[in-house]
Image (cartoon, rainbow, N blue to C red; front, side):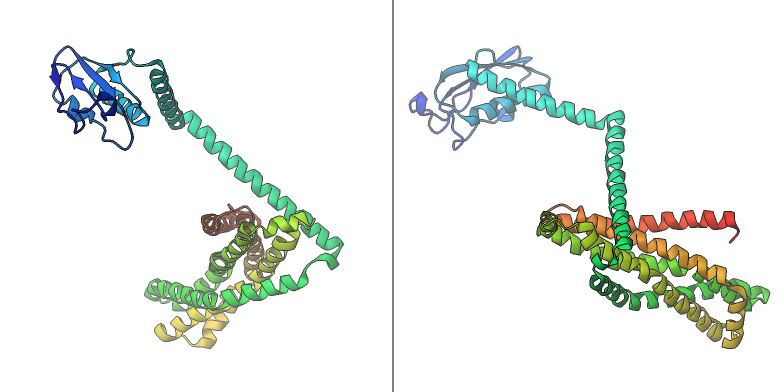
Length: 385
C-alpha cells in the first residue's frame, strides 16, 4: 500500500489532524482512507495528485479514525466522485457513515436534476414550446395595453374635461423640440443622396429633369414618413420609456393606482396622443427639407433652374401622394407611443430594467413602423394609390 506524504499535523493526535488518507497500489481496487478532523479552514487533499498515474478500476473510500467533519469532507468526496466519473472508475463509499452517505446522495440528486433540466431545455420541442409561450404572453400584454388605451380614448371623447390637456401640450412641445433639428438634417441629406444617385443614371439618358420626380415621390410617399418616424422612435419613444420606467421603479405608478387613478389615462394617453398628432406635422417638415435637398443637388450638379425643378415636382407629386404619406405617419406615431409607453410601464423595478425598457422601446417601435409600412404598401397597391 502506498501512503501519501503526511500533512504538517500528521504526527499529532488523529483527532487534531486535518486529514489522513492513503491510496493502495496501482491496478485492481484502490482504497482511499479518510480520517481526522475535517475543517474548511484546513487544506484538503487533491484527488488528481492523490490518484495520479494509478490505473485502478475501482476507488473505495474507507473511514479510519474519522473525527469531526464539515462541508470540506463532503466537497472532497464530491470531487472524488467527479474525478472517478471523468476517469471512468467506480466510486464506492458504502463504508462511510450513514449521514455522510445521505449528503452525498442528495448532492448527486441535485446534480442529476440540473443535468436533466439542461437536457430538457435543449430539447427542440420544449424550446419551441417555451418560445411560443413567451411570445403569446407578449402578444397578450400588447393587446391588453392597446385595449386600455382604447378605453381611455373613449372616455376622453365622452368626458373631455377629465383629460390632462396641459400634459398633452407639454408632450407635444417636447416631441417637436427634440425631433425638429435632427429630422430636418436627416431629411435634407436624404434628399441630397436620392438626387445624387438618380442624377448619375438619368444624366446618361438626357433626362436629368426627372430627378425632381424621383426625389419628390420617394420622399413624400416613403422616405419622409419613414425617416421622421425612425428618428422620433429613437428620441421621443425612448424618452417615454425612460420616464415611465423611472416612475415604475420609484413606485409612483403604484401610488396612482392606489389612489384610484388609472395610470394609462393619466400617463400613457397624453403621450400617445401627443406623438400621434405631431407625426404628420414632422412628416410635412421632413418632406419639404427632402425636396429642398434634391433641389440643391439639381441646381449645383445638373444646372437645373430652381423654378424648373419646382414645376416638375408639382406635376409629379399629387395630393394623393402627400395624403398617403400623412395617413401612414398617423399610424407610425401611434406605434411609437404605444411601444414607448408599454415598455416603460411594464419594465422591471431596477436600473437595469429601465435600460432594457428603453432598448426594447426602440426595437418594438421600429418593428411596428416597418410592419405598418408594409401593410400600407399592400393596401395602396390594391387600391391603386
